[in-house]
Length: 177
Image 1 (cartoon, one colour):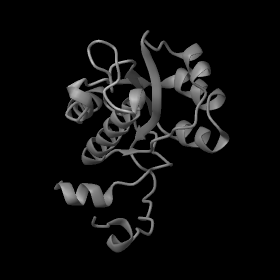
Image 2: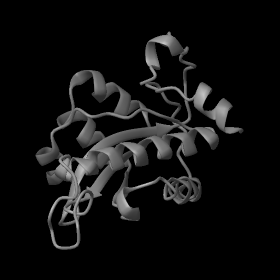
Image 3: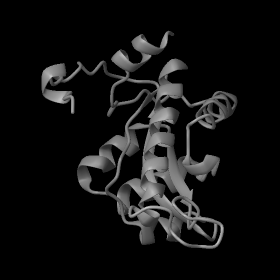
Image 4: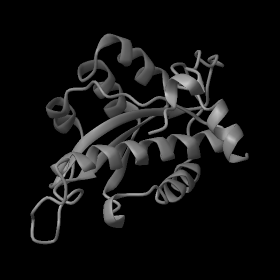
């Protein structure tokens, strides 16, 4: 799919078919997502695929009700983590900019979106979720030391075709200085 069509047709999917996501397909998506830009090419994003009972436990105990149904509908949940204390830092541990360690949030967002675009290109739907109980998730799955959970992404074959929400005009979005 060409880049413009990919960007124009990707939607947040909240209802999925029960068909499993093949691990080989997921590995292709992660390979593509590895090309997401990052602070000084630190590549701090990591992906943990969760299926079965652990996915259901996360859905039923770690997220608000409106996200519970989305995760339970999907055959797989991706937990996006980020390696801490790398984005925004110099080698001596000092911050490079006033944004300090918040660069990790930018990098994780870019990585999550790149993951979702790669999944869309492979015919899969996704939805980036940001409201969750990180401590509760850590009781269900192991998060490697030095990483923190940045986002949850249910993934699967869409069982809906969401319409594009209205977009703001270029005149509203763009200004010249």
